[in-house]
Amino acid sequence: MFDKLTEKFEAVFRSLRGLGKITDENINCTIREVRVNLLEADVSYSVVKKFIENVKQKAEGTKVLRSIKPGEQFIKIIYDELVELLGRTVVPIISEKAKPKIILLIGLQGSGKTTTSVKLALHLKKKGFSCLLVAADVYRPAAIEQLETLGKQSGVPVFSKGKSDPVIICKESVGEAVAKNIDYLILDTAGRLHVDGEMMEEIQLIQDTVHPHETLFVVDGMTGQDAVNSAKIFSETLSLTGTILTKMEGDSRGGAAVSVTDITGVPIKFIGVSEKLDGLEVFDPKRITDRILGMGDVVALVEKAQKSFSEDEKNGIQNLFLKKNFDMNDFLTQFQQLKKMGPLNQIVGMLPGMNRKVLKKMNLNDKKMIWAEAIIQSMTLQEREYPRIINGSRRKRIAYGSGRTVLEVNQLLKDYFQIQKMMKQMSKKSFPSIGKLGSHFMTVN
Ligand SMILES: Nc1nc2c(ncn2[C@@H]2O[C@H](COP(=O)(O)OP(=O)(O)OP(=O)(O)O)[C@@H](O)[C@H]2O)c(=O)[nH]1
Ligand SMILES: [Mg+2]
Image 1: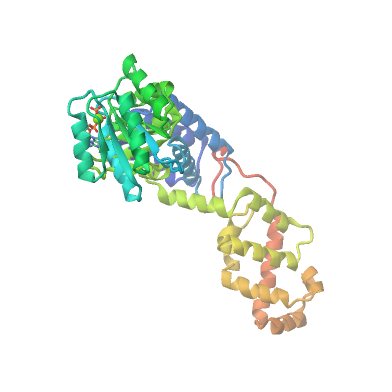
Image 2: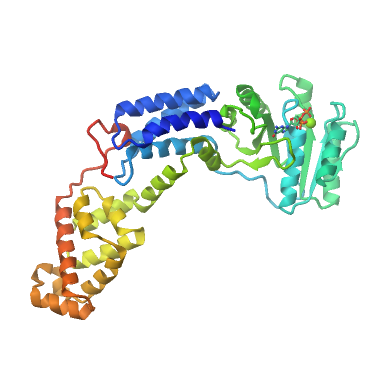
């Protein structure tokens, strides 16, 4: 569906992904490529411009995490921005208590309104709701029959009044839905152009008469920029609550999907992916972004690093380590705090100023943390505050008290002094941001 975009992004990311070193130059080069890709995929110029500006700005403000490659972190920024552009989260169809909930489908001729109205009814029916379809297209020959046939195929009742006034048909259908205790009333209207004043007046009248909970603009995704432009114009004239992009399974360039939310200000709620009646998907910005960028693994990795190591936590831990008299009590507290955050090696490794080689030698694994706690708890208060007084005989006593060996006590004390030393050396230098790395920066991975 987004093959073209995907293909292009793959090429950009392939080179970006491996970068352990990232410079202003290759950031700019990547941004240029992303820009061209989006434009070639028929994404609106104004949307591309905004997208690029946001990515640049985020890159500037993003601190480099040491546990992941800057290239990967940059991919995550592009990913996040695309999710944002596509609407961030799923916006489900109205589900409030009102009965019936009224959904009005509008759009240009042939965009897929009738098919989509039945698809939508089926989708809601599968969720256990009752639906009533309304044949409000009285202009196109056989439009009513088309809806009746599709309704029959899917087992959804159709309300039709022949070729009478669509406003009256819609109004009466509400009464019918109330009488039959229907959950969702779905109005299938005739195709219209925004320049057709009479038809636009009619749809406004329908809106004013039935007060739909949802007015969804059904748009043919294959038509690219035209789709976006028509959606924009309709959204300016009528109050839309969302769009549905149809015919998205083909090799449409995907640009319409990327632009339409930003341009209309309303979310894409569904996409049509086949002529068949089950060919409707809930529009999920994250899933679509995954499909376009195909970078799920990188995103998960960066998210994990960000989550387990937020700025606040980092400062908190740093402050703990930097405490003037970093004693055994602090050491213990840290162990306990760090334990909550994930594998110790990984977490401590993310702290700036940590020497990876020393850490590796210390082998800070979670099992070790359990006995480390026992050992520290066997120390006297004085020993915890002044670990340097822990001589040979004290070590023996502590080992005995904690049920560990003297070797292990020695090891723990060694670790403690190492960390203390590292912490003293640790500068409070702030992290560089991705956008201002300079060519000298290299992550330690
Ligand atoms: N491949 C594909 N075809 C679709 C999709 N949605 C609708 N169609 C096809 O598009 C054509 C037009 O669909 P309709 O549902 O009749 O469109 P409409 O907007 O009701 O058309 P009018 O009532 O004439 O304005 C039909 O051949 C549908 O089968 C879709 O998601 N994928
Ligand atoms: Mg129709």
